[in-house]
Amino acid sequence: MTEQADMRGKMPKDRTRSFFIGQAEIPARPLEPGLYLVATPIGNLGDMTIRGLETLTSADVVACEDTRVTRVLLDRFGISARPYAYHEHNADTVGPKLIERLKAGESVALVSDAGTPLVSDPGYRLAQTAIAEGIRVIPIPGASAPLAALVASGLPNDAFLFGGFLPQKDKARRDRLNELGQTPATLLFFESPNRIGATLTAAAEELGAERQAAVCRELTKAFEEVRRGTLGELAESYREAAVKGEIVLAIGPGTAEAPSKADTDTILAGLVSEMSAGQAASEAARLTGLPRKDLYKRLLALKDGG
Picture (tube, rainbow, N blue to C red):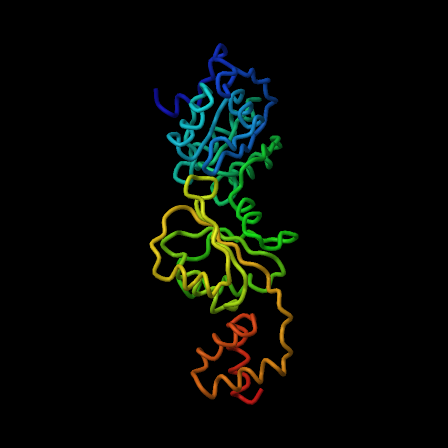
């Protein structure tokens, strides 16, 4: 049977509405119609919530990024639902079918491969459409890689900003770091293991090498690792390192009191007498914790007599 035919069909009414934790069979209560955004584990399947399991068991449709990944989760807890693929490559065709089923009074559970749906995945398009159609959207909270990294980093957590993935190209990456770098909050980014060294180097040069940070890798998994230190220390540590796994980079807010404009100008003037403008701006960023981009602009202004 094709995926298209499956999407039109109803779930068998006699299918088991229960899930298993160990040897215990737990009945699942029926769901009200609506779009359920179900958080799934980011590594350790033991982090799946009871409410999430109950939702996946009772939903008329379980939509996911990769059916193979979700099948592992469903099998782990004895859930017989058949997952349907919904991802960025088929969202234009599968999304309307899901909306049709929602409008017909059914329940749809949406999951990502790991973590909370709508965070850096195409699920937000489905949620936006559902909201526009007056369909109820229900969050089922659970695992979240950015939040796990925040609490593991040891950095201030009274205010934080999730920046998703940084741009791949160096200039765009540096521009984005400068754009967010002055936010009085801990910054959280997803990053590729192939780019973490370059990103840490850029962050140290643009935001200041003394700024505190943490590289959180493979959270909740067997090889979980959290390295804490200054951006300069971490950049040096990861410069030539071979890194694997999923990474969240946490960068703390500036903690040192910013130097006065006069003091900054004095630092810049002393440095530029010994090195190029670019090098002087980078060194001043390391010494002051101020963004390199702003220091470079100030240095050019001083050279022009500003």
